[in-house]
Length: 204
Image 1 (tube, rainbow, N blue to C red):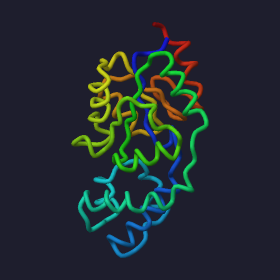
Image 2: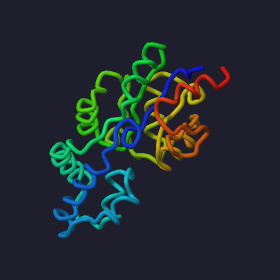
Image 3: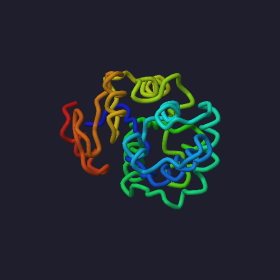
């Protein structure tokens, strides 16, 4: 049966924006270190959060400056974003079943809101946990804990769906059942729509 709440990572689960982010981070390299960030540098780090980007890529800026740059640049490349066709039907199914829904993303709020709107998923979440609302982004548990607090549910009454080691670690640190999308976890699914199969197979 369904838990009381399901928490979703955004990038790689609801949408795929690796190419968008690469273009943005590539430009950040030019702006803040004098040379572009390469694909070889970028892809192993995807999803780590703005604060980690600065030392990893050797950028000369503050987190606030980099966040502002990302927000400005990201909207210029939304044409490269893929939207998971399972996302809206699943979120509507959960809403209709009375399951509470939260977004848990290392993206900052201004970008997350624009991404959800572009993807046609705005209005389907009751809590938007974004990196600028907590002290520590994933893999820390702060975002998961924020979502649980805002939804009013205990860790044992929630699932989290994610596709990265950062998601898995955050969920486990918060004591939340983790469903990996293309990733091993407490359960694994290979397409988002298969989450209903986990509900059907999970004892109440």
